[in-house]
Structures are given as structure tokens and as C-alpha cells.
Length: 99
Image (cartoon, rainbow, N blue to C red; front, side):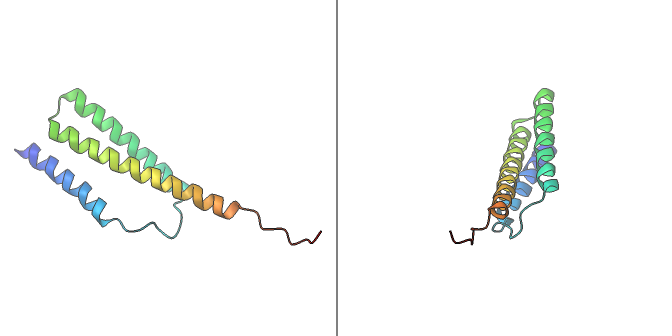
């Protein structure tokens, strides 16, 4: 029963984060944020792999998969926002020379 409660708490935490998200931030995420997102995805994959190997219950594995999916989505959106911001500032100014 304790494991079931733990899995439920993890699902509520992930769902709470999803509902609490606001619109895209006005500033683009920096390189460190994108790297931290990538590291979080790697850690989630490793935890899921260990839980499967240890024979954890379906609830725990489902919670791990949900957290992994949420972290992947966050990493993807942060990376996309960073690329768009970088492309937006890198566009050349129109030429003002009149030939």
C-alpha cells in the first residue's frame, strides 16, 4: 500500500506541474537550462531502466514513464524556444543602400 501511495503522489506532482505551466516565457532559455533538461531526461531513462530491471510494480513504471514524457516535452520546448530566439536575433538587417 505504501508503494501505491508513493506512485500516486508522483503522478499528482507531475500532473500539478502540467496544470501550473503558464504560457511560453518572454525570454529564451539559456544553454544551461537546455543542458539541465537533457540531463533530467537521461536520469529519468536510467531510473525507468532500473525500476524495470528490479521488477517494480506497474504503477511505479507508469509514473516513471509519465515523468520521462513530461521532461522530454519540456526539453523539446526549451530547445525549440532557444533555437527560435537565436534565429530571431541572427537575421540580418535589410540593406539601406539604394542601387
